Image (cartoon, rainbow, N blue to C red; front, top):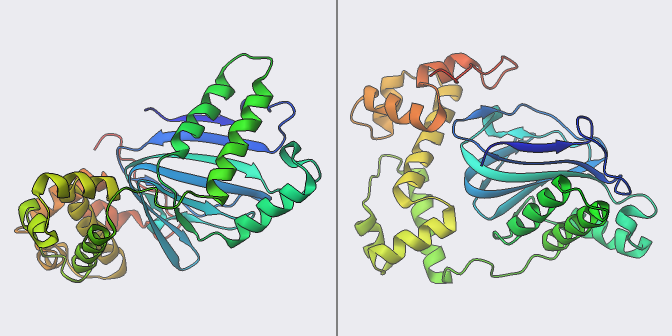
Length: 295
């Protein structure tokens, strides 16, 4: 899915839906810069359909995976984790806050309830992939020539807001005991980045077949087990490259890579630049991210 956006500053505003500001979808193949920004008077909602992404608000880092929704409040400064958004597939929409009379043509009491619900939501909502259909309906409504275009856009936005503020519990079909095993595996990776288990070993430790483990782990994280594990290791490398002055060889050995050359190959496959390029790019500063198109 190529990048697709609709912005009222570049495209035409949606008549009778002044609450709508911007909508988009993207499938990022390589890490891209996402520096601190804000949307005055607007909420931004981002749904991860595939892969993972991290977000930062102040010093807090929020990790999201397939089926997770992250949102920022009006005027709230936010950015990608380490000023970068990782390879993933996602949808986003920006709308004004429900603070005026007739917002989305809803009664004042309903607008107030939505505003209260948004204020009480956790920063990351494990909402599942059901909202993807509503995002697609919104995209279709924005592109079609219909006398009811505004009505369809308004309906899609209302549908999304109801899913966000009234999420269906238990949207993931993975058993609770297996979810606990997944969380333990992920936690162990954080403490032992050099750990390199096979799918068979992980499945045996969880007490399920390899095929069932593979399928449910991918459903839970949005990625196959080995891809997820390698990405976690690379994310640790990103932190160590930016937060320490340790050599690339020291970091690669600490993370369990047999050689710095192998580490560099894996790192570039996930991030789009080499470890040296990442460290030189100054991703924690205001320096522009290096152009990776030709790498």
